[in-house]
Length: 424
Image (cartoon, rainbow, N blue to C red; front, top):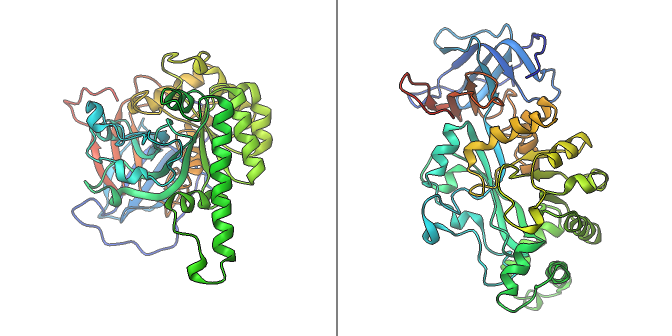
């Protein structure tokens, strides 16, 4: 990983420290570290050598060199270590497609209708899915959970922490964070076998347009109804899509092939909506068009098999090319397609294939947070943000790096053990 000169900065959000307690909210200082702040602006460099990260009350209070450390603070000496924000997977199905649970734990797709905008990931997530333990042990402290891609519109997405409660509402950072949609093979395969529309890519696009137009008409009727009893009957489906039409949330569109990406961009232009392009396996072929659109992409899972025709060219060439074109991207696992603990390995392999090292680490920290819509809380080590922090034995993009300490909201949830043989 590229070395950067040390910098002197000890910024504070200018608020009083909260009283700590036995749950880990007292002041903690990680000192003598090489820190990747993942920050942008505010006078904080991306990399700082010999730095201190100070946090208290679940929030980061200062970062930089020359940071005054309170006498009562817990000290973690990170000499020779790397400190980063907690990693973020901006597209996965953790908790909604449970590890090792078979059909009983598979709640990602309500594949009974091609448009199910009214369903919510929130209602299908089991926060006790064992995959959350794998995530935390791998330095992943935040995830965006999407419904699957069986449907043209599959339901609400959300962003949540990976540790902290057995109650999913307690973990949520943002809901909804988007509305999941899908183009390409998946919906036409699912509904083709049911012998109903859509059975083709033509049908995919038409079904999406019809859903958007129906919601638009619903909104118009609500707005023009002169009396309450003349308003259309409440439709949870249309209300959910209306958030997209009002640009309150993006439509997060699963599309692998270049032609499906162009269809997504075309429909976004037609309706004046915001989208994110999910997977973008052939994004390198239309990288200029994606850049022109201004929409971000989530890319991956790149470390997996060629399971269907539309991912026959899957690999790291596309994320490398898309990043070099200047498109904002997040690297994702699509867990359980690729186990979530390999998120950082994917970022490391992207670097091996030519991605800039700083871009790769940002693609699993700040860029991921920005794309998921939660950069005000997580994704960088800015004072005032949540104290989601990881201490690594070495460069986390190296395959043999070990995750030694993990803090979520300032509480240590993983600590190095002499008996700890877990390579994650």
